Amino acid sequence: MSQLPVIVGFGGISPAGRTSFHQGYRRLVMDRLDTASREEMLVDLATLTGLASLDDSGQFKLGDALMSRDGLAAAIEQQVRERTLIRRIHPDWFDVNAVMFNRPATAKPAEAPLTFRLRNRHLPQVIPSNWQVRDLGASQSEVTIDGNCDLIFPDTKTALVQSAGMLPTGFEPGKLYQSRNHPRGLQMAVYAASDALRSMGIDYDGLLDRLAPDQIAVFASNSIGQLDDLGFGGLTKFPALGKRTTSKQMPLGYAQMPADFINAYLLGNVGTTGGALGACATFLYNLKNGVEAIRSGQCKLVLVGGSDAPVTPEIIEGFRAMGALAEDKQLMALDDLAELAEEHYRKACRPFGNNCGFTMGESSQFLVLMSDDLALELGADIQGAVADVFVHADGHKKSISAPGVGNYMTLGKAASLVGTLLGEESLRQRSFVQAHGTSTPQNRVTESHVINETAKAFDIPAWTVSAVKAYLGHSQGTAGGDQLFASLGVWKHGLIPGLTTTPEVATDVHGSNLNLPLQHLEVGIEGMDSVLINAKGFGGNNASAAVLAPHVAEQLLSKRHGDAAMTQWRKRREQVREQAAAYNQSAVNGQARPIYRYDHNVLTGEDLQISAQEIRLPGYAKPVSLKVDNPYKDMC
Image (cartoon, rainbow, N blue to C red; front, side):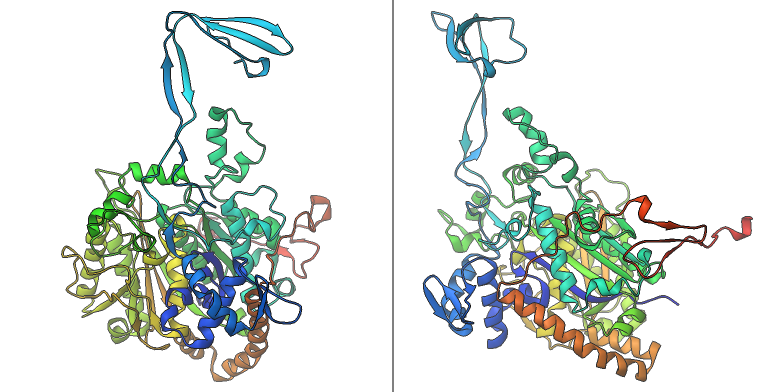
């Protein structure tokens, strides 16, 4: 019997804010929220970004003023809008008007040879053959150059791409714990994984008494590694700039490092770990590994996630050179503008509309998956279930970046599974698609064709399609996580985020069987039974996940476990929800801090109790069994 992987916690940080308890989702649909949800989301963002803090009196401090929660929400709403989602790149990231772009040149002598003085420590280690160096004493030298001299002049230029989906301005994850020069993507991962774990409302340390150490797994990564100055970015450019390479840039740059950090500094995990890479489909690749680990019975608890921080001048320039990003001049041409104002940068990403390229984004997203039997035993609050994730490559290609045929198979299989599990009527009437939706002219044609042809094949008359990159930008490998958290919110607030930055659907979009809402679509909290999360990745990495609504997951579990077991689960769930709500309020008030356990309970081989049957670890009630089933019995 396959275990159903149920979602019992989720968290993270994106341009919309904190993910847990649907706070980030709420930012997407804030104009349609009820008053209480809207106020909580605004206050959460205010404390998250340092705009306000909770005073000892129980009121919120905004500057020198003290005010109530509703007063604070009203006072900071406009600032919150300006500090979130896609917007013009803020100087906290880099100065778009002064991007480093050093200029090489060859200096030729005039009538006299080129002569200059400099400190001895600035002399090159290998003196060029046409240099004459005279020691002046006091650690100074005079250099005379006979002939030409190659130089690099420090220079800057104005960035051609000036919009991005950045984390809320003012939020600095590295200041919330002892970050020790961690690259930004890993700082975000520490925050996001902590948020997901605490959103469960179940103490993780208490789980160690119930689970064997190898029943826990972590699958997390990013698509291109840590490419800021504290990771691979600095490793590759520092020598050319005359800066010293540090001991941390190489190891902390690896793309699997989000999983490594969680194992070492949050969970102390000794179970299965891994970081799959698949360009834009990376999050779903890791999700597939998590689903298979639980469904097979190998694991009972899995943390799945990703963390990408690609809003750097170098990465943006790399994608721009490919012709993939929306440049400012192209955005001006789209709307016939002489110059771009702040409101125009916010509409840079237009999925399935007349567009000119995607918008870079950053994000870190994590899910906590449990086997269905453990979730019922613990009273876990089930937020949904992941039925399966399908992955296919594109086959032969002319251009490695061009889309191919793999996505037809992944989406078709996901749709088929939903139809088989829930019935054809549910698939046709109560499912929707969270599209990859990058906002490139090529994607709007090719992905709409994939979704539309799949809708035709399954007789779906008007398949609703959402694409949250319109708000968040493209966070590369974590994009599937962004799509998933924006879908879970639909089952809390009943609104599918619309393509609100798209003025009209482009004429070349295939839409005969699609519903592409340009405004938020109200469907009710149980109006949709499932969502299909779609990813079309660079290089032919395609993935589609079939995710079931919480009310559907409960129906399936009732059939498996019976009404009595479900009744007991609901009773246990009450306390779990109370504990989760307490964490949420501490986070809203700006009092929660990430989990970070440096040099905590470090084990060595001498700490273990080893026999031929099992290995016992300090801190775990249950051992790791060494009795492994022989999968090749017919060959022995």
